[in-house]
Length: 419
Image (tube, rainbow, N blue to C red; front, side, top):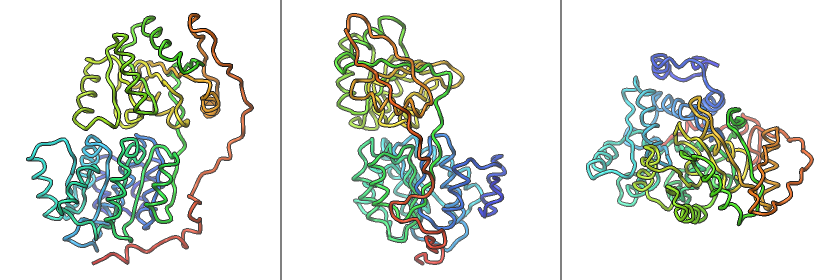
């Protein structure tokens, strides 16, 4: 479907024409009409699917059409990291090229006082759109630099990463400042239970739009060790002794486990660093800079790193524990075999995680190669196969708060804006 087939306004369409954007991606095709129609939206889509444009284009189009207060903050877009906030801000400048009356300001931490003064000036002049990280926005809220009581649009981007980084309470503090009739949009790459709970508390009868998770690239060489938990570190030691394992990411689902693995690998004289939500922005930046520059061989990380950070030359991904679902697995191993390079993904499957890994294999549609344990480690758990179950194929709108037809759900927000 082409952008010109929507009712995005002419100024937005002119900018898209200049940028040579013609065809919508699937997430854009499904989200743009719903946001234009005034629905709250819960979007589940991977990074790289075009979701930034899926919410920015309709919101900017509506703002440009008018009817919103000139002296109010009309839209807040929340981002988990400074890097993503900068990317959204750059997209905003491109899409809003012909929007003379729409102003924006990016608000994020890790900067000097000059940057803070620039943010403050933008807020006091009444920026229409704020693109912000949670901590920085809260600091402005606490000292009275901004008022969200007349905000018309609120977007929470990469919600799963927000929760991974410990921003849940900050998000809810910000949401409480929003008016009831504020239209809300939430995007997440995965849909674990804590994201569902956040959506229930934040969204009003949302339309759920979920894109199927892509299978991992075929060129990723996937394999697994079936093992007991105490055997995992010895497997890593053997892997590093056997080959030149540089440019490696080791994933674990818990930050305390990441810290412990890092301590153990350093005792093995492995050049490594850790990445998790206990590090502040400056520390995370330093860790990533050294890893990208090749000054660190191995990065041990929680799922903060599995989405949204582009590093093209990762040779190996090691899942120290089995991810919670197939979507997390795809995101993790997708850090390797990028930019036409080869890559390997190795997963440690403990006796307690066998069933979970079998569910991932069911999603992949194949069995992952099982490597034999080094002889000195003794026996491995038995990996008993299970019968495959047919997927229920459930997609579509979210039923937890009632379905209803589109006409029954629609709230005519565009005619009920606060002056």
